[in-house]
Image 1 (cartoon, rainbow, N blue to C red):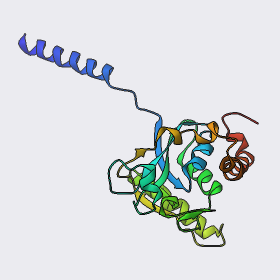
Image 2 (tube, rainbow, N blue to C red; image 1 turned 180 degrees about the vertical axis):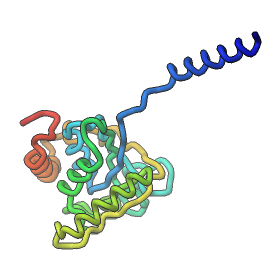
Image 3 (cartoon, helix red, strand yellow; image 1 turned 90 degrees about the horizontal axis):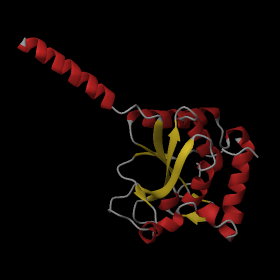
Length: 204
């Protein structure tokens, strides 16, 4: 009788544990650096399937970096955007296609007039799957000779992501009349919307 009671108890506990187990999330995140994070963030905020695009810092060693620290170009940090997306709607391949379309991966530590190691082109991976995918897409681009110059995008492990100050979040959306937004970000947005118009959150 005691043995039967124990079996029933274990079975009940097992069923209870199963019912309490969280459902597997369809959300995944990847962290990318492609120059000024305002530009990268603005693009991905409009890609269908992206749940959030958060500007921040990655790749340095000092804890809790500030914009002033990173702006020196000596902190080791890059301006990055951490992109969280729904794998049922978009995927890493599409995320990378957008990435290599809207920034120049052949200019070392710069994008246009933005110069410094903080503006480097980089993919920060959090697991081997992301690392392999990044290596594959870069190798494919090199083989296809898409660019006239060599790709300098680095593939770096994501050790820590620090969210940037609040005034950097949604910068383009909140400051569209600013000269930088009009002259630098808007052209990138127009290119993105033209080439990925079927992938936009809002069809235009």
